[in-house]
Image (cartoon, rainbow, N blue to C red; front, top):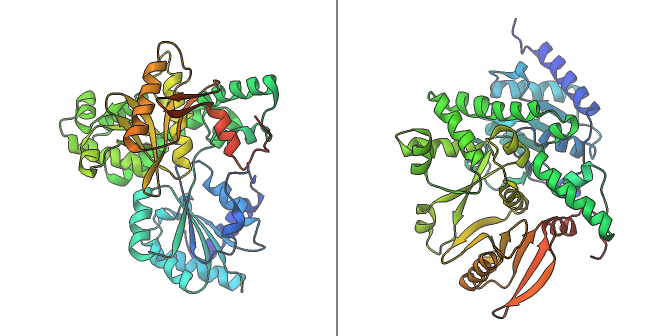
Length: 425
């Protein structure tokens, strides 16, 4: 018997929609849903596995009285093709005449899905998609759906969303409230922002997310045969986030002879949203790509669970959190190195708009290094906005005629957040 016969498909769809409607709507994210409710283009939600894409669909679904929801990561759809999507539409239209809203979860699991999506979009359906593979989505969207879609990039909870998760919805007032938020931020660096882990506090959830990405999304999908070296690379990168690396140095570290193999593997990790590369700033694109990169992860909690831990790694976690915050806002980031170093340059609308140092605490030992690196980067890029982000320090200074702000990172995040009611500092 065909496991996906007309009758069985109908049963699966009814089961999925009912489960979807009854699921927990979750924590409010930073996203303003109202702009997407009547949007004429296809809405594509991308992000790492288990970061809350399905929950975001669930929140969007509350704006619609009726809709079709299909979870294509369901094992009952294993091996399905585009003809099954067509059959699903037939069943849906028979039972729901006039309903024009469709949610397709983990769409990349169906080969040639973009042909189907284009056809029903042309027929006037409002379509919301999710996907967990950047390369598959970008190539297929780019070939057949150019100009027809907009993308929402979803991450595990950022710190303001984490605060919302634990019940903090107002900017802290007073010394005690600020101290509590500082402690909460340190806890966030340890736990990260994967919703499932925060709900159940079970490290096995993070291990399983990592394994699903490594095995299902990469090893199986790309047919990797050197499984042990690939796993070593994953753990090595996650144990050495924020540090300079080249494909040659990574190959040497794990004993792989061909650096091009490492380059391919790093590409797969990026496509799965597990890591991102940050390029050294240079006005020459060729030199940018030729120099060492820095690797950043998707989540501090995931890093802490699957990597080798080192004492005194709070500084690394702090820098990682700053990266995640600004990257999740959609900015392009670089790092700067000349006489000194600056952790992040934000590139927006054709120029460097912000220079940022990430430093848990300015001390007598590191103050000159952090400030001089920031000032040098600001001069080199002609940027007027420089800030040193710390755990708790707050100060303004002028160095060589250049204004420098020192701010607690949590303060910057919460002050900019639409989720937190504001009060004056």
